[in-house]
Image (cartoon, rainbow, N blue to C red; front, side):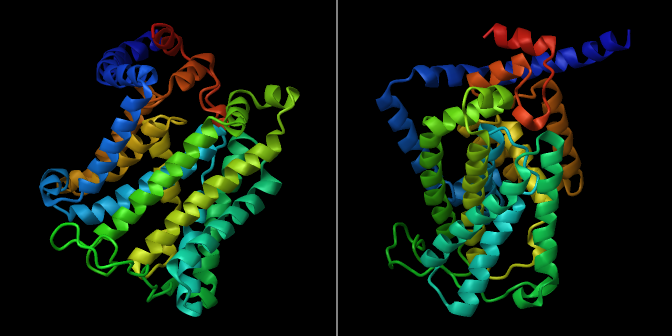
Length: 386
């Protein structure tokens, strides 16, 4: 009896959500059939839209109570790039990582320490930060990736807190005061595309050059992630995500590929932290709390874990919506949290999941090692009707 009451209450909400998300599914199916020239045209238009996004006319609607260009850099741009990195670990390899903020912090502190102590160039530092962050991912993964599910989540959560606490208690890197006077990226030219905008001149006031730097980094990372997804590595990750035991029996070196996923995700997080530190000039350990890891994970799951367009959409919404409704003050966070909970109840596969991920949810392996092993009859019916 209680079960029927619960399903009756959720049914209308699920039907309304289906009406909202059906256009997303139809768009996904159309995209799968689209010829190459259409795809490249859309890619070009998306990049142009991203470059034009910081304009004041767009900001008047998107963020009337805050500086839109600043929000585009952080939280939106940073969240998108972090979500793409975390998607490699969670979405493609099916590993639950609750300490992803640690690699973001490592990249930021590498930029801060080398930039202030050694005076290296930003472009040199970002290479070092990527390598150190990737090595940190290997160091974390080597002893822990034998674990699965909740146990792996607990270890990664602890790693994220260890990094933050070490930074807070190490005087050599500023302790709780952090590090100040972090250098900007070097100006590459005095080119002025539109009045009062020099996209390669990095200063204190204008956040737009840093946003364009994030856009360029996002394009490179997306190309890299898509190439990986279509490669032998991506197929191995998909096999591990769906059934790790079966993948290992079939000859997939699961440990090696999981370690690779951690290293690549960590490298992307470290690169993001480097750009973040260069823009902020000053960083402190409290810039890297656990809640940031949870927020990025929520963005990945909300958009559609494993599907890059969905992950980008989820990160954009998670970064933008609380700022757009800043007028509600403290209630905006409560409302946003309620929307996330409702979303996970009525559409756990996310706003824009791939067709493969939808099928995995129907079979009960939708989140890989993340614990979503039991599929509901409604989910099966939804997938079979597509």
